[in-house]
Image (cartoon, rainbow, N blue to C red; front, top):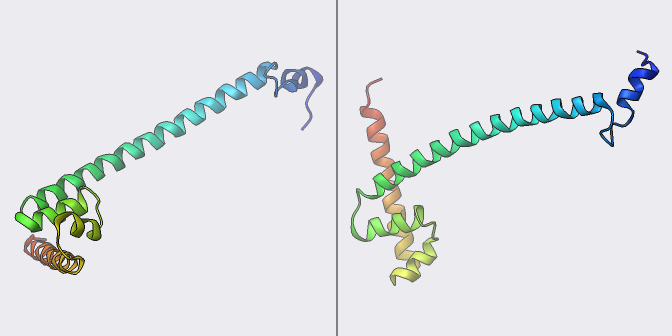
Length: 121
């Protein structure tokens, strides 16, 4: 493929953006990038919506518990604290909080399995 001198001069100053074809190419590149960014933003918004729904479900589940159990779950899964931090904050031993958390997880898993089994397919 050969480029004549007239066309070459239109591309010549691509780095300086003086050539009209270079400007056109830059514009097309910007449009392509904008299109990709819109797609990424759409995907991120969908992901954000999904995470917000999951958080709402978690909060709803936590609200079904009461007292210390609710407090442990809320601090762990809403506030993001470690079990060690929760134990320190509430004045319980770490081993007690770990065992209580494990018990709560068994209850939640059992209830999840029960719900899945009772949903008609």
